[in-house]
Amino acid sequence: MKEYKGKIKSGLGDAKNWVYKVNKPFEKKYNMKLFLGTLNIELEKEYILENADRILPNEYGGDFDVLVKECKIFDHKAYIVRTDKNNKGYGPHPLNIVEIVTDINVRETYNLKDEDEIIINI
Image (cartoon, rainbow, N blue to C red; front, side, top):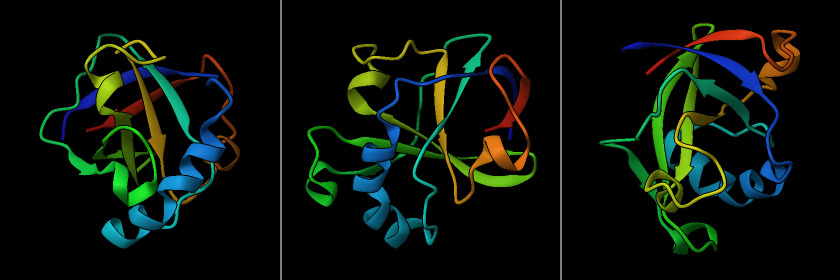
């Protein structure tokens, strides 16, 4: 795993609904029931997801493939998720923003706020 440094950022506010949609296929594939929200991390450089797993639109009722890549934050297993569209540079987030999903509310568990620095291992 490679270490990346970033800062906590607020998201667009629609992650709860989106994570709800992918939760069942995600749990089936990765054996993890997700907290209904994401943690947004602004990295120092753009990050393109390569060699990522996929959740297909027909698996969650969406319009785009969802790319999934395992990572760790605070030694806790987590995943980067990003639509295929966003990974090609056409989505709502710039490529230096990664969205993290896991089974806990990371902000509350680790008392994080916007602009706090964080290390993510990918």
